[in-house]
Length: 353
Image (cartoon, rainbow, N blue to C red; front, side, top):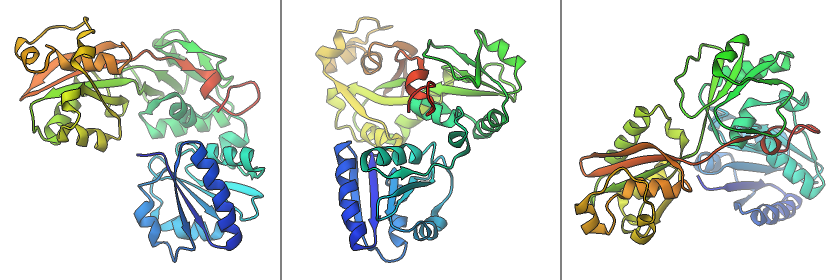
């Protein structure tokens, strides 16, 4: 999904404020849509799943009534905020953490002089929020129920175990106890494991968080349908214990830049599709094998592994070349780490948002 924001206003004063907000957001790289005095809430049906954020400039009551029929899930609903037309208060109404409404409210407060009215419990109490951590650190949240339980325990003052397969940078929040092995998470009633593949001895108390750091390198014959490409990709991920949400980009050779199936797959998964020339690909030497036929056809004998490695910034293969019905696939993981100082929370001395 594009980084798009919908602004809605209902009065002349609100329209003026909307123009100010639009300029601020566009300067941050957002694509902004602006609606003035829309009638009813039918416009939301069109935009609800097409934008990341909706900002109403006006009364909170109007916004609440209009969005009510469309609210489904905080993990899929857009961020919804209200800014009064005088610019005094900005209030996140929906998807404060996962959707980023709280962050946008803070941004608007900093840039306009408004006061951000944040009501989510972990923010009010200055506590670590696992859903915010997952989003900002680029992690797949594998179990919503466990995440909710962890937040509840933290609010009660309980310590939560924390283990990471990856390097941990910065100061660990006081609500977490860092351990050096996954087995030691058994000491805690609730725990978090940051790991490449879910499937360890988890138990009901461990929340597995998976990095979004995979590049899927793919090659195919001309005209292979998106469904067949997607099927192989899903099977490949399952074979190595990874989740679809961990795929950060799709990569191939430049001759496939206009291949409909690959382009459609990237669009459906909402990931970028990057391509490389044969000359760029051949510089990657750490591949498991070469195909003379493919080399004679496109100029390089192993497209998928090379594309995956290049797309991941020189990462390591987690799935070697696999071929099926005219499709090749490889998966590579880029280097990754947990950096608490950059990603965790919004209280003094405990990191930044």
